[in-house]
Length: 299
Image 1: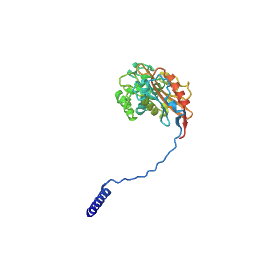
Image 2 (image 1 turned 60 degrees about the horizontal axis):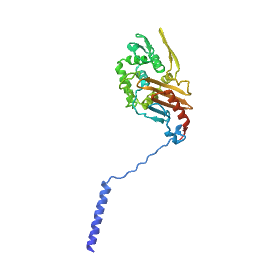
Image 3 (image 1 turned 30 degrees about the horizontal axis):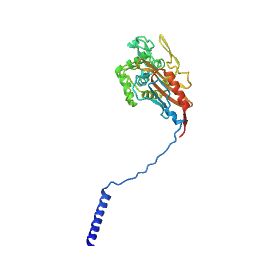
Image 4 (image 1 turned 30 degrees about the vertical axis):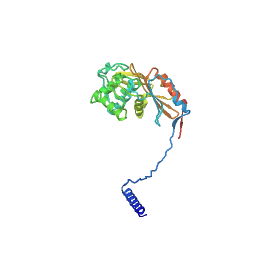
């Protein structure tokens, strides 16, 4: 009996010691209260039929990325993170850096750019041309020589202009995009993804002047002793309701590239196709599919 009492006393002392230790030294659980404000989601695109999410559109493009611009909802995606040659869609970044670098009315002198290959205005060496006209020629007509005049006109030189383009890509978080030339000519290291080009286009469209240029079907620019008629290289302008740009691109290695803005019924859709065999047919199919199979709701 006495042994049992001693055992119970010892057990109680051990239990009390353990309780005291745990009370003072064991981390205490704390509960914090947070106030959460829930906001309604307006104009969010949702599928009319969830099975459509897996529908094959038979697009010829290697990479595709389409978003609803206001909500940043991804509407369609295919290999959007694969790095490919961007061709003249590179000029979107060239335009953004040019705005950071020059005044629009600043005049730049044409030098060796007169010999650049591909689509161009055939600028004459020694010719003076304003930055705003170079931007128009580059974004509407996709003139390669205009892109090079802008890059070479940089006060710190061509290499510094290219560094600015790559730094801006990095600032947008585009780790798979890199530029070696301002026109998008095929060159090792000249690369981007469909998603990255969509992000660059989104930034370009924030500038009203650039947004207006990419949606312009025709524009005349003129200076002393010269006049150029600029016709937009985007064949969907005026053909499909709501198409408002943004940029074409074609080279041997890039295939056909197209970044498209569609404004319809108060919605903005931004689409990018890379390495397409028929960019206009692909884009037309994708626009029709999105508009037929998505509906915008307030959630």
